[in-house]
Length: 115
Image (cartoon, rainbow, N blue to C red; front, side, top):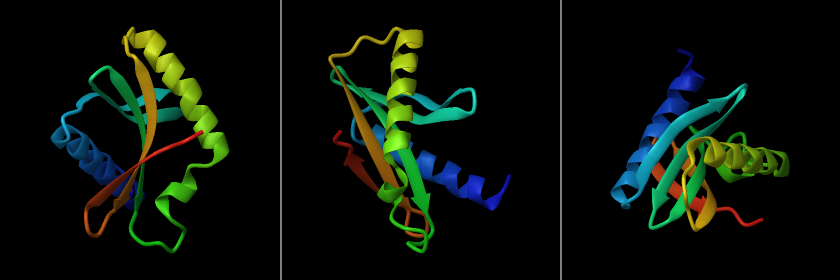
């Protein structure tokens, strides 16, 4: 496994732990549909959260949130609709989050995307 994948997997694990500690149920991790994936799908009180995890070892290539472009947001919406259809999960709301993880410190910051 490459260093980049190790860093990414650690970020996803830290983010899943953050959601679990906050009372969310983690429904899926790294759900793949062809070449694209949803990093985390979580649920709490009727809200399904689709989470894109961005892990950085430094700010050299920008802030984690900057990596979630408009095109990435559109892809996430399509993937979320497909995941919900395929899994038959009933929910009142769907929310899209970005988990910004600092690899060195292990800190996780959750930002809810607004469209």
